[in-house]
Image (tube, rainbow, N blue to C red; front, side, top):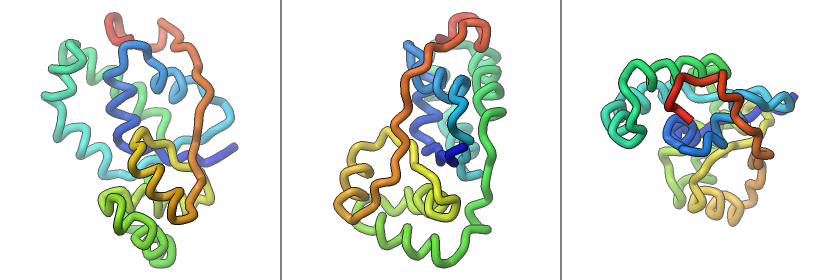
Amino acid sequence: MTPVVVDTNILFSALLSADGRQRGVLLGARDAHFYCCRFSIVELFKHKQKLLDLSRLDEGDILECLRILLARLTFHDEMSLSRASVAEAARLCAEVDPKDTPFVALTIELGGRLWTGDCVLVRGLRARGFDRFYLPQIIPLPSAEMPPGSA
C-alpha cells in the first residue's frame, strides 16, 4: 500500500467540495495509506469559522465530516522527522513555500507520495527534481458515509 501524505488544503477541499471528490478518495481508496502532519488539525480548527461559512453546514455536521475524514488518516508528529528528510524538504521548498516543508519531509521520510492541491507547490517542486505526487482516481462518495447535506 502506497503511503500518501495529505496536505492540509486537501482536507479543506474534502470538507468543502460540493462534488465530494477528495472526500471520496479519502474514504474509498484501497491502494493508499493516508498520512498527515499533526499540525493540520490545528490549521483546520484555526479556520473553523471559515469552513462553517463556506460549507453552509451547521457545526455538528462539519465536525462529523471532520471526524470521519480524520479517522482515515495516520497523524505524524513533524518534530520526529529525521534531520536528513527535513533538510532535503527545506531545500526543495525554500523558494516555493517553506510552510510546506513538513509535508514534503514526511513524504521523503515515508518514501511515499504527496497529495496537494497547490499547483504552485507542484510546479516548484517538479522544477527542483521532486516528482512524487499522488494523483488519485476519482472515487464516487458513498452517500451513507457522510452526514446529510455534506456532499
